[in-house]
Image (cartoon, rainbow, N blue to C red; front, side, top):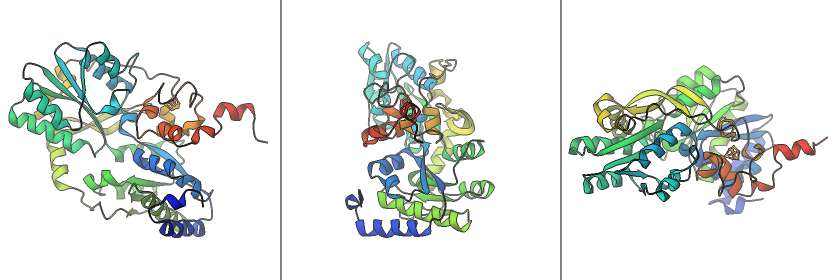
Length: 375
Ligand code: SF4
C-alpha cells in the first residue's frame, strides 16, 4: 500500500486503516486544526490512504499563517526604527507585509535578529540596556506560556528596555467561528494535541454539545492521526458527539496548571483579527494592564496601523477549509515558497507550503479544471 511502509509501525497503521475502511458507510468531512497535523497528513499521504468517503479539511492552526498582515506591518514599522533590536523566530522573517518583509528591513540596515526562545531576546535586552529590544510574540496556546513567562521575568527583573509585539490566538473561538459559518462543511474535529497539553480539554465539551460535533484530541505522528480519524469516524457513524482524548500520553484533562496560571497572570482575552478571516471575538490574548509597559504596540504607538489583505491571495479560504491550496489560481505558478504571496506558502506549517513540498504540484488547479472540465 502506498506510503504505509514508511510508518513507524506499518502493521498498526494497516489495522487502523482497515478499521476505518470497515466502519465508514457514507461521506464525512473532518478538520484537523493544527498546521503540524496538516504537514504530517500530506507528507505521509494519509489523506490518500483513507477511504474516499473521509475528507480531511485543513484548519487554521498555523500560527504564522493566521497572523494578520496588519501585525506584520506593525513589526516592520517597529523593526525599522533607529535603536531597536527586533527579535523573532526565523519563520516570520519571510512573511510578506505590505511591500516588504523583515529580511528586507534587515537589508536596509534594521537590526533584525533570529532567536530560538523569547528568553534569548530578554538576554539581548540585558546586554544592551541602551537599546529597545522587541520580541515578536505570535502563536497559539502552545507558544503563549513561554512568552508570558518572559514578560513576567522582564517585569520581575526590571528590564525596562524589553517589550513584546503580541499577536496570540486561541483555538476554541476559532472552532466556534468555523462551526457558525453558513458555508461550514466540518462534521468532526481533530483537536491539536499540543494545545490541549497546555489548556486541557475543559473548553471543548460545550462546543461539542452546542454544535453536535465530535472533537477528538489528536497527536502529530502519522499513527496518532490515523487513530484520531478512526475515533472521529466511529463517533460520526454512531451519531455521537463527545470529546475524546486520543493523545492521553501527552494530554491531561486539566492541561498544565502552571502554564495556565502564567497565561492568566500576564495576558487577558481580547478580540483578535485572523489573517484572511477577520476579527473573531475573544479569540486572542494581549498583555494585561499590569504588563502594559512591556507592550510594544503601545510603546511604539503603532496601534493605528490598518492594512487591507491583498485580494490575490486566497489564504483566508484555505485557512477556513473552504479551498484546498492547489485550487488557488496562483498555487505553484505566481506563488511558490521562493515567491510567496501569502503566509500559508511561507510557513513550515502552512497548508500551501505542505502541498508544494510534498508532491501535490501535479494536482489540477482550479484554472486547469475549468479549462478541461471532467464530463
Ligand atoms: S497558494 Fe499562495 S496565493 Fe494561493 S492561497 Fe496559498 S499562499 Fe495565498
